[in-house]
Image 1 (cartoon, rainbow, N blue to C red):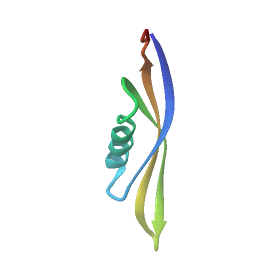
Image 2 (image 1 turned 90 degrees about the vertical axis):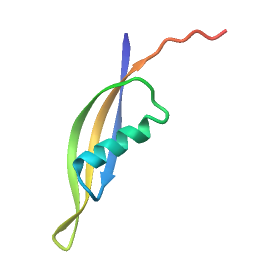
Image 3 (image 1 turned 30 degrees about the vertical axis):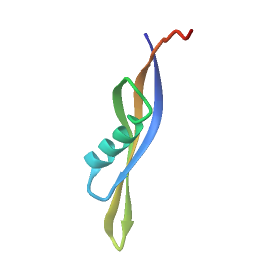
Length: 70
């Protein structure tokens, strides 16, 4: 098996979990076979001393599928 790891960034005003889920769901539209995800970095956007958005950088690993064309 061969795998590839890509970097994604998810953002949500509602929390870390939603930011992660949105990033993975969006990538799932075009990337098949995602197997693992790791949070690389967590950041917050602030305004007037309040968190306005959660920003999560992810490493997502998926399987490179071997398909024969012909």
